[in-house]
Length: 86
Image (cartoon, rainbow, N blue to C red; front, side, top):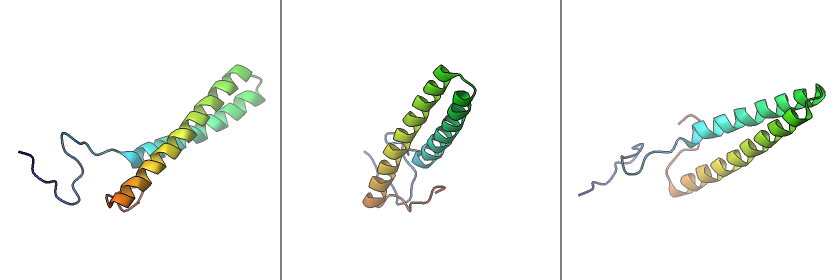
C-alpha cells in the first residue's frame, strides 16, 4: 500500500525528483562554452571543429528550452517556487 507523499517532499523510489534546475544550469554552461569555443575555432581556421561546437551549442539551447517548459509545467501544478536553487 502506497502512502501519500507529504507536501514538499523531493521524490520517492517510484517517482524520483527530477533535477531540472541543475539540468538548466548545465545546459546554459554547455551553450555558452560551446558557442565561445566554436567562435574561437572558426577564427583559428578549424572549420570542422567550429561546426561541431556550434551543433553542440544548438543542442544545449534546445535542451534548455525543453527544461524551462518542464519547469513551468511543474510550477502550474504547484510543485515548485520557481527558484533556480530550490
